[in-house]
Length: 75
Ligand code: SF4
Ligand code: SF4
Image (cartoon, rainbow, N blue to C red):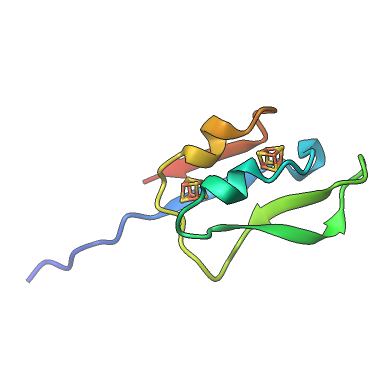
């Protein structure tokens, strides 16, 4: 019997360009993004992938980010 392969998606955050508006976190329904405990060079708590949750590849975060900080890759 063939196994059903789960679709794997990956979200990449260019954290040094994040200005900490957190729109992406608000729009990510699965909670696959979180706010880092660290600051980037601009002095903002940047967003990073939340390894405890799975990204479903909806691309909402990339669409709402005003500074094109996020890229989403699907299989
Ligand atoms: S692509 Fe969708 S599920 Fe994945 S991190 Fe962005 S908003 Fe969340
Ligand atoms: S929407 Fe873009 S700039 Fe705003 S917190 Fe998310 S990654 Fe950073």
